[in-house]
Image 1: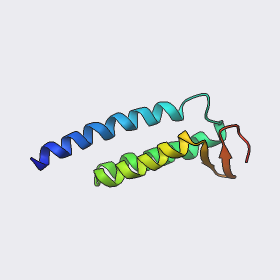
Image 2: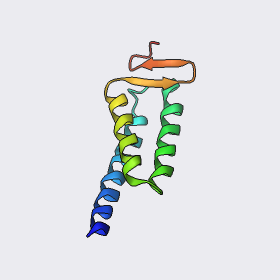
Image 3: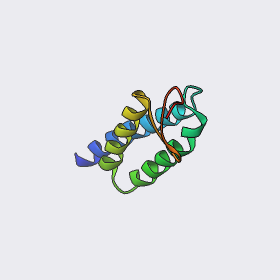
Length: 84
């Protein structure tokens, strides 16, 4: 039974990762924020190979940041409108 739960979690996480990648490529995301967001997604993707539940929590935080317009850039925080 636990295996079935893991498969469901894997499927849900895979769908959310796909959605997150699409959102990061969105024209609404400032160019200065795309690289850091992409790096975060790559880290989450790598973590998902070892810790599905932890990766899902990290992805939820990332998606919340995107939804709320909080982007982390190398030069500091950037909002959806591109202002620091």
